[in-house]
Amino acid sequence: MHANGRALSAEFSELTGQLCLRENGVMVQEWFPPHSWFAIASVAGARSWGTQPSADDLHALIRNELITRRID
Image 1: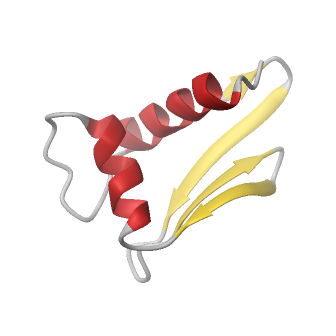
Image 2: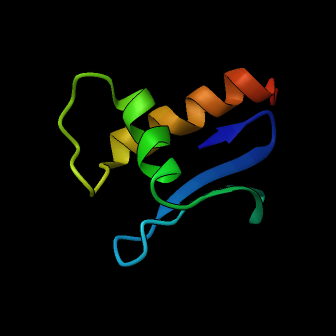
């Protein structure tokens, strides 16, 4: 996802449960279970994502971080 010249991405490792948020390729936030699961569940809402978040769930996480971090 791009916002005002910044490339934002979220990566989830199914192997470890690690969740990383990157801005322009640099890690700005990192979560490990159970916090990674909480981070996804908090933005996934009523959707059933289990332990493998969808691309929509990761985009929702990025949008949420944009709002809470005021990255604009």
